[in-house]
Length: 313
Length: 316
Image 1 (tube, each protein chain N blue to C red):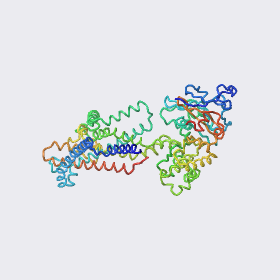
Image 2: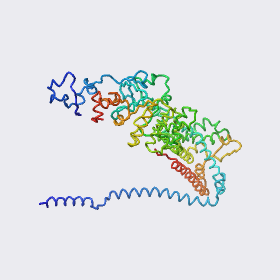
Image 3: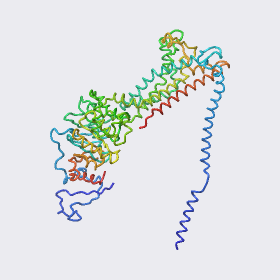
Image 4: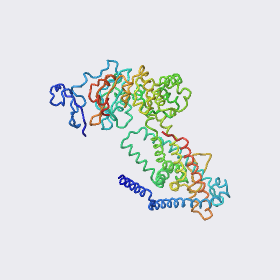
């Protein structure tokens, strides 16, 4: 496959060398090259544009610290050697093209991938310093502390009340359930819509309301982190804005990690963005992670720039 | 000047019109359709003829004897013999099926679908269960004969029954429908979307909590439908019961002792039909009347299953 790629000359090959450049004014040259002809390291991080330093989170501020995390389904590696830190009380967006392992990465944060036959990881995911995949870690408790909102709204086919109350019940909640249900629905900005029909089925709500119900269900167990796997991909723009507004409010209390296919959403709603892409082995890897405004205005990496300007993906 | 292209356009339109308005009859399609309708009529015709014969011969007996036919015990004289014991025996057999194969079958299905990892041994078990559901019922009869009547005869049916007891028949039936219960339950469990399980796991539920609070309740209508149909199967099954001793002579209903009833002789509706069919001509009316009762019960059970399926069906 022929691809047209803009390659910036390395630093020592400045405009002065002119011989390879069509005009001395433009420092870039246009070459047509095949994938194979471009050296992998150059394609992903040309020396001239390499980020000065990787995104760092201050000590004690990191909720998750990933160290060389690779995720496998059987022998297929879906995620390759990712190291990054997720900051507390911020919204971290994970963006990247389809199939680059964003969801797999997210699901390794609360051991949701354990439910898939043949899924395994190497490397480590530390949560407040504790290795989530270490011996003696109870995945059930992990998932209670690290809640999840899914791509398609998936309320239980039960009443709105029972949708919210299920998590606290299995967690052995002893307080007043009515109060907890109300406060969870309020925090999910759904209370006013549903306060008169708590006994009607959650599946009868609109798509956006269902997704807010799922958020209420997630926060009812008082988690520390909320993972969102493309939570707005099945919603219309107005419902999407409501969810984004809600995310900004929830950030005060929770750490949020959101996988999104929608770059505008990441740019609008997140504080920090991680960009993943995949190589020829189809394993996703981290290209760049930076504060969102920086990543979208001054990407340190050529691949990131190509992606956010819509050249691929 | 413009006439040349205009003529060409007309010609093109004519060609199109001729090809789509040709009005030819596709005789091959007509022939195939006629053949298929013919086959359908033939099949339904045979079935209808059977039913007509049964009803024409059976209704007079039912009309004459009324409830008496349903309650009378087996007897040597045709005009005294009824299906009372046969119905009681069949209900006992259904009870065995409900009591034994439902918990075992549903439990096995929950394990296979919700707990077992997808390994070669799980796949082997699934394949074996599927094949067992297709094994002819007479083979289960032989199994029951070998295990319950011969090997365990002294426990299952001591004394004159020599092992051919209600217990032997019930256990055989329970084993016979077990694979069907497992398969239908597993299918109902599989129909519950994975997203529901993920949602429940996502708020910190254990696997058992996910199964108990969500998967099983949502799969229940499908499981009920399948189990009711398996009861209907047990109700209509004949061959294995003949091997494990139904019919050999009446039915001991001992209301004072459940154990003696279980260890005693028994009969069932379809085996009674079989038995009467071999008797002299004067039993012919009884045979048809018993078949009507059998068909009526099966229709009611199947209708119940269909009603439950539509009443509680969940669309995801």
